[in-house]
Image 1 (cartoon, helix red, strand yellow):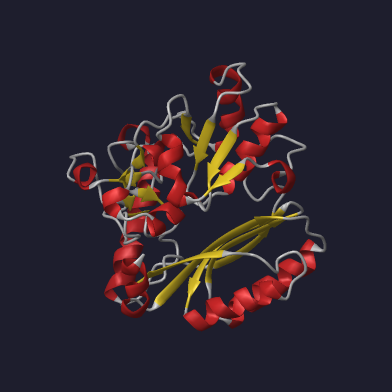
Image 2 (cartoon, helix red, strand yellow):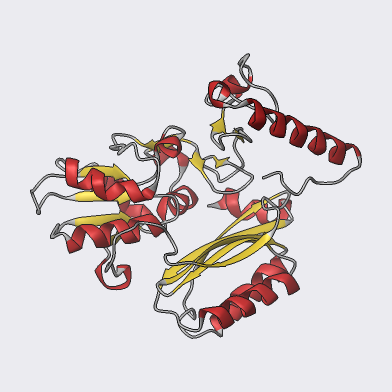
Length: 312
C-alpha cells in the first residue's frame, strides 16, 4: 500500500520476515554462513533452520537486509525465498540468533510436507469474496492471545495456547465432512502452510489459506475494503501493528509475555517491568524479586543512555 511505501523513507530500519518449506541439508554449515552474513550486515533478529526449511524475522539497514537476501538468492533451495518488508524507527530485536531446529514452526505431527500438500493459496484481493461465501468455515490458526487483539470478522477461534494444540482442536471440532470449505489464516502464512497440509493429509479436500498471511492482507487491501478487525500481533518489540502496518499501542508484560493494552496498564495490578493483571496473582516472591531487580537494571541502563540487553 502507498502508506507502507512512504514509511520506507520516513523510517530507517527495515524489517524482513520470511519462510520457506524446502528440504535443506548441511544445516550446521548453512547456519554458520547465515550467522556470519547477518553479523557482517549488522542485523538483529531470529532465523530458524531445519531439514524442512527456513523461518526468520530480521531487521537492520536496507544494505544489511539486502545483503542477507542476496546470500539466500545464491543458496541452493532458497533462491526464490520471498521476504515481507516493513519499516520502523528503531530495531525491534535485541540480538541476532540463528538456531537449528527439528521444525521451523512447532506442530508435533510427523510426516507433513507443506511443500507438496498445502492448501490452495488465496491472494489478499480474493480473500474477502471467499470468506463471504455461505458455508465457508473461517478458522484463525493463531494462539488465543493473538486472536484477542484482532481477527477477521466471523472467524472461529480454536483458543489454543500453542500451535501444537491445533491438531487436537481439529480432531474435536472439525467434523467428518471432508468436502466442507475451510479458509484458514495466520500472521505471515507459515502456520497455515503446515495446518492446511495436515488437513489435506486427513482427507479434507476444500482447504484454502490466505497467501502471505494477515500481514500481506493488511499491506494489500485498502482499509475501507478490509474485513480485518483490530491489531495484528507480531513477534518482536513492536508487539502489534495496525492496518497500515504501523506499530500499535500494546506492550509486553515482562513476567508472562502477554500483550498489554492501555487499559491493562492503568490497572492497580500493573507494575512496570514486573507484573500485569494477567499474572499478578501467579508471581512467586522469588520471581517478583527477580523482576524488580531487572526493572532497576533497565532504569539504570536508560539513565546511562544504554539499552538493557534483556529487554524484549
